[in-house]
Image (tube, rainbow, N blue to C red; front, side, top):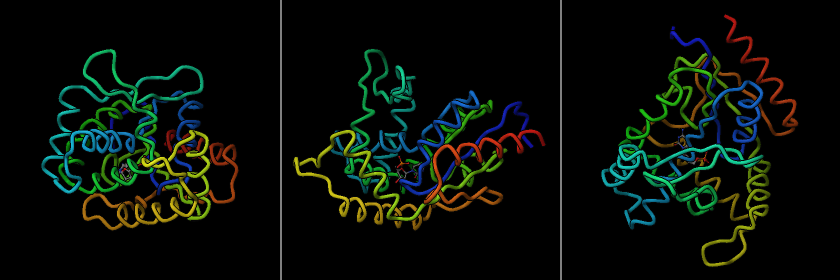
Length: 243
Ligand code: DC
């Protein structure tokens, strides 16, 4: 077992299952640091798109990711008030806040493609492991309990029906007032299709595919209130930490 004093909490699951909201609330309640690993893949995808790097060139994408890590150019900062963690790019202040730019449907799909390349995963793995090394951290993603921290004290897998997941994403996109790149409105049907594509990419890839970790607590969030999910997970983490 590890020498950590405080536990590592690993939360995995498909897009829209409720990971972000639940992970943020749980981290707040526990007084733990929150690490959103999906935001790392999204940031790599955003930089690759901006630099005109093909999303199918694993080596070049790996270099984009390794460059961000090497230059300390991918930074997570606490936001003011309720805005949560902000994602910033740049190796020195003033860094560009890309928190909204990485949340577009286009970048979401690109992140899913980019994340299938082993070179990209390898470049981000150390960063993720360092972030959790001392424990007292909630990490959310697709492979936290299976690859990044297979020895995490508390492993959690969140699911929800495809319809509920797409509706959640739709509500988020609307709240941000986002449109497609060509200015057209994002539709629920479009998000359902994109989510399906992303699911099959994330589950079907050869490296670190999305799957339940052994020993994970599985929670179906389709019909549960956020408060109830957080309470259940909080109790689970406490029970796992006292062993
Ligand atoms: O959680 P998210 O929607 O922000 O993640 C965006 C993409 O990044 C997702 O489609 C797959 C990829 N990802 C991954 O491969 N491994 C992780 N640990 C987190 C995200």
